[in-house]
Length: 119
Image (tube, rainbow, N blue to C red; front, side, top):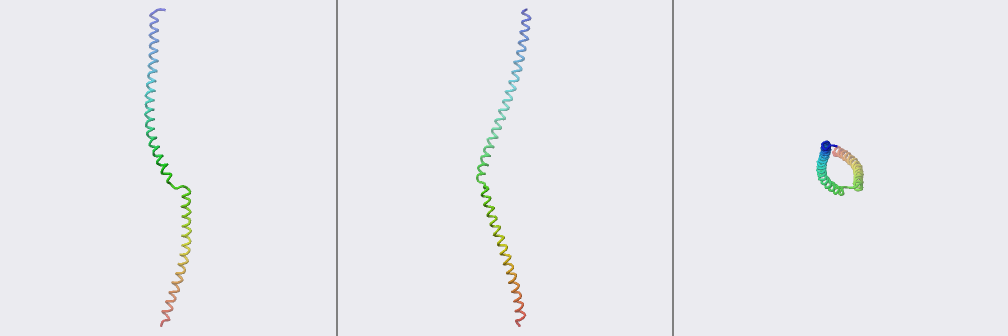
């Protein structure tokens, strides 16, 4: 084998090695940029999640002050009691109204009688 041919083959191998190294370097740098973008995105998401965590904590704190089903059941029972009492009052008022109508009619008849027989 001749040294000139060996030098040419060495030059070809060197160029192939440099091409492979260049491709590897390009892919590695591209991955670095991708990892940088992913890291920036993670930081933004972590910041947003921190605010969401605070908001959720405040909501959970406020929810402990809200009425439970037992409280609402008690309110509904009281509303039913008031409704029943109002129904009873309506019946009583209807009876009083009928009595007042009878008294009014009787008073009118008595007034008419006294006016007609007073002379």
